[in-house]
Length: 380
Ligand SMILES: [Cu+2]
Image (tube, rainbow, N blue to C red; front, side, top):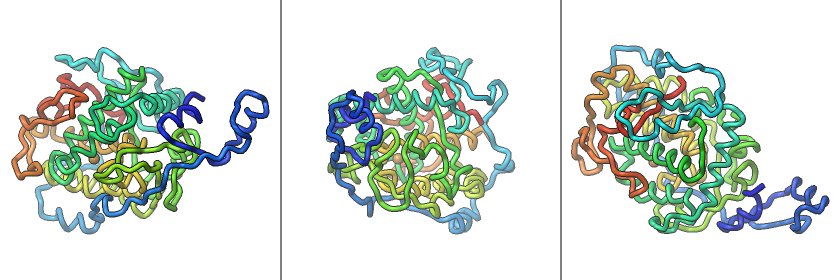
């Protein structure tokens, strides 16, 4: 209830849609709003010209046909499941292991949405709302909430960390930094999460993630989100590299999310060199997941304003991890590809996080279980 109308108005959102619950409450005398509240949504601004560049699967197969391939079969790639029970688990998060420690004996497990308990799901929605209702740090132009600080940080670094090899390490550390802020500033104390897009390729809208209980529905026309936990959310960072008040919008496209399929993912995973895996995944399943949800999510610059961003980027990060695990002695020991200026990436290349978290080198985050900064894995 805290996030409903009152807190929405804090950051200028104005919701409404029919609010049956509200009317009922009003009748019972608990809420003093007008019976048929009509509060306008922030403007719907179509995202065009700033969406993700894409390479369809057939083209990717040609593009990467002659690059070195792995000996192992990507269909067998998985996170190491040895010590982790696969059942639903509440509160498996261990605070100890997020501390930068020299070892990582008790890693945090990121659970796939379908394996994530109802209580964890609800706690997560509340924690997201908490960040949306927290004031911005003040360090990020245009941001009107702590939540939007991340959209602004991402917007600032966009050219630096997209369409070059920095894409994966930067986003790994970005998601991790967001996780730490969610825990430290909003008391989130559950396991983290990811969304297996290969299970939902071509049918994202049918996952209960996109239901009124959670992120709201994923319709096919361009629309402001008016249901779910984030109905009426107003964004101030973006679209693109500018900043204009706009609503959280979506425009689901099943033909785009259809490209987030296992064949495409496995085809990327079969590339032996990091730079080929990275490029394939960024312009393939990653780009299609963004554009397939559409609206704010399609925006290369400001998409972290959309709550689904974090589900998508854990999916992307998990793909990198299972690619690494296929040949850990080599894939943790080196990196290749180049940054935006054409300089080769090395383990000493620095990943900047705009002061939200200390800058790190790729060496510190290349292995999510190293215990140097990171200590997490995925449930499969
Ligand atoms: Cu990004």
